[in-house]
Image (tube, rainbow, N blue to C red; front, side):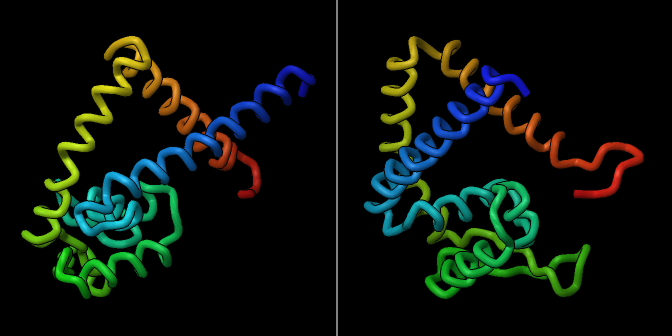
Length: 156
C-alpha cells in the first residue's frame, strides 16, 4: 500500500466517522419532537415498508442484532411497534410499526424534508446530492466485498 493510499483510507475513515457523528446529532434533533431517539427512528424506519426480523434489521443497518433487539423491545413496550409471527421462522418474530409508531415517524417528516431541501441546496443541487449517495454506496459495497472471503481462501 502506498503512502497516498494510506492517506486516502485515513481521510475517508475520519470523514465517515465525523459524518456519522453529525448524522446522529441531527437525527436526535429531528426525532426528539416526535418522542423518539435517533436509534428508535432508525429501527422503526427499517420496518415501515415491510415487517422484518431483528436479525434482518441489524444486517440492513450494519449494527449488532443485540442492539436492535434491545431497541425493538423498547418500541414494543411503548406501543410504537409490535411483534408478529414469522411464517419463515417460528422463533424469529417480525417487527412492524403500530399506528402510533407510524404517526411518530410522520411527525418527523416536516423537519426531515426541510433538512433534505437545505442539504440539497448546500451540495449544489439534487444531481450533486445523488452523486454523493452513489459514492457512499459504492464505498460501502467495496468494504462489503473486502469482508467476503475470496474464492479458495479461508474466511477472515
